[in-house]
Figure 1 (cartoon, helix red, strand yellow):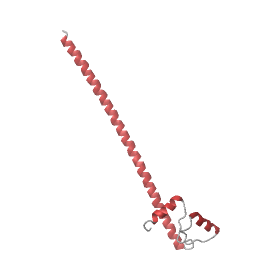
Figure 2 (tube, one colour):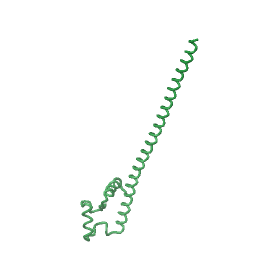
Figure 3 (cartoon, helix red, strand yellow):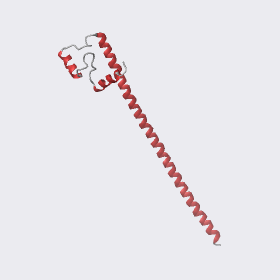
Length: 125
């Protein structure tokens, strides 16, 4: 494919339109199809070699469009998976810190209570 030709063909493929050939550029895809259904032979349709080239280019463009869409979908899937993993790790870390804070709070409270108990026991005799 020539530079820029793939993008132009890809836009036709994505819209599901017929790719115009030489001499058909001014016509719309549905106009070309209506002429062909009426029996007119459009340029490029009557030459086997040109038709083979057109089909090869169309298939090549279709593969490029689908591969770009697949890459985009795969990138989005990977991003979502990574976000879920990060959220899971963050939630685990938050719960671990909450448990640690609770343990430290309880141990400091026990320490205060036990020190007060022993301090009170030694000062009363």
